[in-house]
Image (cartoon, rainbow, N blue to C red; front, top):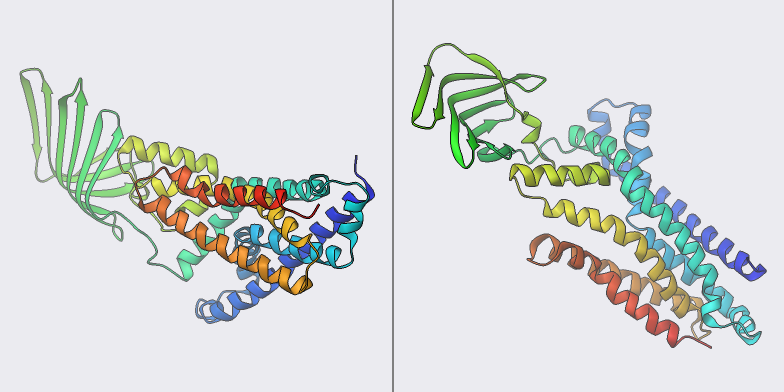
Length: 362
């Protein structure tokens, strides 16, 4: 199934790729540690805690963001050496088509894309949960985006709550209101001046409350301004709490469940979650596209050799990163399909890869 040339190219590709990953990991850890060492010391964190709770998860997280760029650089680096040594010309002169020459590149890229896909959707988010919780606790304690004012939320299809104010510190809410509907008519109304979280499962204490029930023309009223009442509601303070990096802590199944719950409760703010889910799929495909582009460019023997090829590869990688950031901004802020906006760079560079292959050295 695999010719000697196929095995040779796959070995060179993966070897160069993982060497780049190792080199970048070492540089990233050193730079990160030099930046955060004072905070580690301020919180009296041991080396074991820092390693187990932070850096063991930091390395795959930071690398996953740049795997497509590493694949491009790796392909350009070793393919330009093949071209310089006339190995590419020899293969083509022996009757091999350029598309056949690309087969080992595609196989290696497909392997990396598969690993990246599984890691993006399932493995890295689990590590991120530990790493980012560590960051939120010791580095960025104010990184939360807790809803504090004029909170509207559906508990289910026929129940809705409102809070005028909520304090995260003591978990006390002011001016609470619970409405229940049946056949589009209100059947239950609870109003309380204060509501306080008492603990799991979903226990709350309400004070200075009034409960009204409606049954056709009949109406009942319970009014209590003195005695607190312990009750249960289908939400917790954590349903109001958000972190700016929360989307990176959830696996894709958890993201899908979160998006469904947010839509059901009418909280909105699901667009960023949808963008993150599409990005996790788009990035692995990017590896395949940039691999083909890198091979098509570097396989041609030109003056300037490896240096020029590397410069072109870095320029293409930089262009792709800039375009990716623009597309993520469009996906998060503009009224366009989030999936389409995320995939714009892949679509454009995919077209470019086809053109480059058609015009590649024969």
